[in-house]
Length: 225
Image (cartoon, rainbow, N blue to C red; front, side):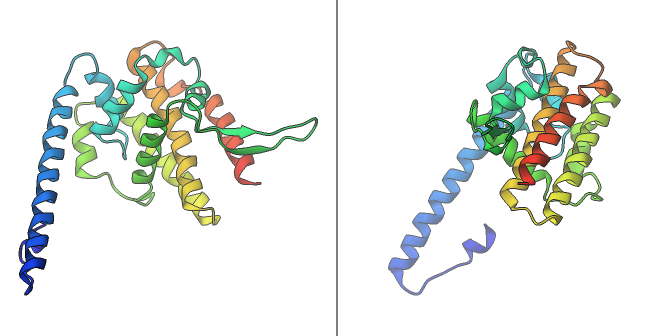
């Protein structure tokens, strides 16, 4: 924004218009900062702090996204399987089958559209960096006080998703399809992380790999069409 302050127009009406727009942008930026500060305060609430601290260990998930996901879902244990959670977000492919013919369609977009949008945005942020990119200072800071199991799981998620989205991109698939596929798998990892934090499921390193494989198989069948 500093360079905008140096701009001047010879025409006084253009200059006045520019100053009004510039003042409006500054006002909105200040408002966003105030709201984000309040959101960060909410992240420290004992009821959600542990879940949020675990989610932000995954690259691409910010505090704002994490608290939004937790607030929208509430109790993750109501989803018995990762596949159920993915279906709830509307990120799973639909199906148009008849007799022996099986045909997968685009994602259903059923369920919670807010969570679906957040997961797609997070996946898009995650794919901006290459597979070999080192952890950012921001991610290291978030993982600093997390347990070894959570950090390991978060790193596994990041590496898997980046590799998968890179592979799909190299196959020439459209950007939106690749990002949506990444968001679908990210939903599985989010489900696993939240159930681990709630301590109501199996050990984290044994989290329903079969379910993730089943969803991945469905994804591959869908994109192969």
